[in-house]
Image (cartoon, rainbow over all chains, first blue to last red; front, side, top):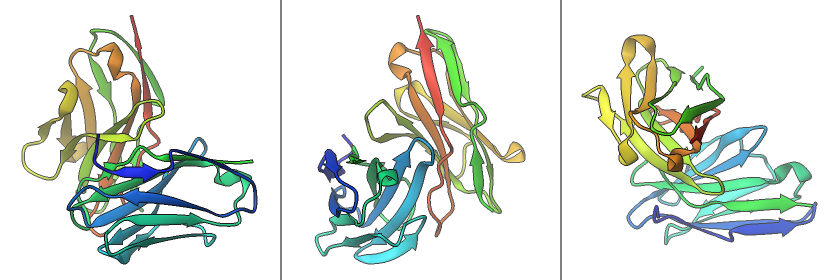
Length: 112
Length: 112
């Protein structure tokens, strides 16, 4: 158990819908990262927050957004969902702005 | 551009045999280096990390990795593989201030 929690574990929704994925980092970690894992794209970095501020952006679509709250938990919002958004979404956390990251169990999103 | 290559997509090893998974990276300066393991349906678990110093690093579950600057490599090894080691393994270089970049992964199968 890495100490990073993610909810929900599974999510099934229809195209065009909007969903919110939630992540709680390990106690004491200030950074939260979001990744998307799919068969064709592999593990792709989406976005990083550090102590409430956006720190780095990767291959995140404009339909996707994230935020980190004062209690350091983070939410990833995915809107206008398409079939191709079906993937595993992982959250990771680290103590500082870099270094090793600890991953949550992931949320499997299925868009039908 | 920063990149990481795991040349072997799939490797099959007999139980009890030794294992080496290859990782090569291309970065301007030596990055931090990580190996992660992902069991089916699970999140990623940090196996080991290299920041600096001794080029042979020990990790969990009996794994080790050797950093070779001249070859830009960070290969993962295990002297005797167990059936429970069957999983997908990811090499991930990381340069401070940039995102963690994952290789495409190597799937390890263990035969009895």
